[in-house]
Length: 401
Image 1 (spheres, rainbow, N blue to C red):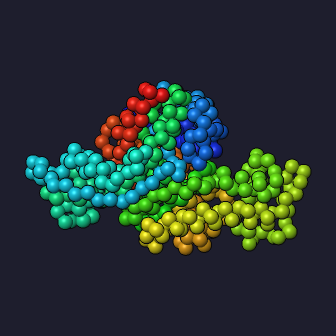
Image 2 (image 1 turned 90 degrees about the horizontal axis):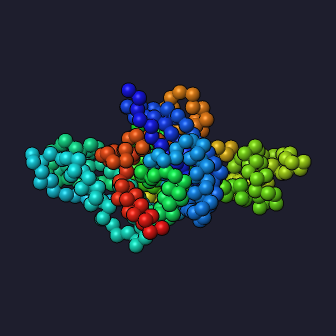
Image 3 (image 1 turned 135 degrees about the vertical axis):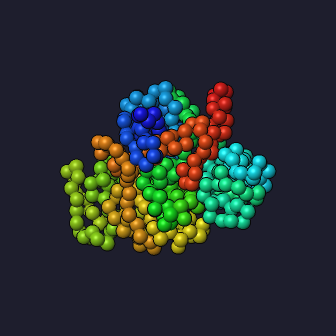
């Protein structure tokens, strides 16, 4: 029996991707049925700055994919995203001390309320990292086990209500219904990382158009997330300014000749473009400076979270910005760990267009839609999501807007 279709929309700073597909019953492979793209307008660094322009861009991608009227998972990022680790403990007074799905959800709800948030913040994800049952650690799936004292360790991700509201409004203006909001690096991780990667300890670095998103997994559990408000669009803007050329020309030059390894470029080498020659060394210096800035922020974030030395699996780079020549090599130098570029894996059928890093978030949204559903029980590990409340709350605000 064919699995039901699930849908996602990756609302990026440089492009919008709408996607439809089926995830198999084992949740270990996806078949992409349809995909639609459109240039992104009305967004800056993951935040909506022009609702009408953003809605038009989303509508263009939705129409190209054939999603109108569907219920979708939407990726979210931006500098308003923050996160923290917490733990909550509850006494189980249930019959036979058996931990139920209801008790597990109660733990998640407690985690949402442990730390005071700013007035404009709401929790997007509560991701369980592990459980302690009557002092016994290392439990990943507590439901069905017996314990009186249950502690859940979790990673909590929050975002600004106003920014989330603006994003959901723009998406629903395009003729679809938002079923859930998913932090973009978590979606990318679903598409690019294996269970072995997470167990070994790995840092996912999703270099998007407007932001660079970090997700760190240790011993199979999500441990650290962060959003850096710099992405691939900054590379293009820097080239445009430095070479005094139009933005579109700078983008074309970046794609065709760009590298972040300036030391490997001859100082007098020139590249032809549009009837003019440009100094390749100067171009690479511009790009390397910006790439180092992104990686320096990444290293600082990992150091502050005390996880940089705990990820033997190294760094996995994805997103369109990871395609810039030399990014893995520079990442190894700056971060002090092995690095590689990754694209979505476990793709069934003839889906070559999505086998690229820039489609990692979109493909990952399909896994979220299939694994978690829009009204079913929450998942486990890095894929768990707890935002039904925020989607309902934000949608209720739509009635007034």
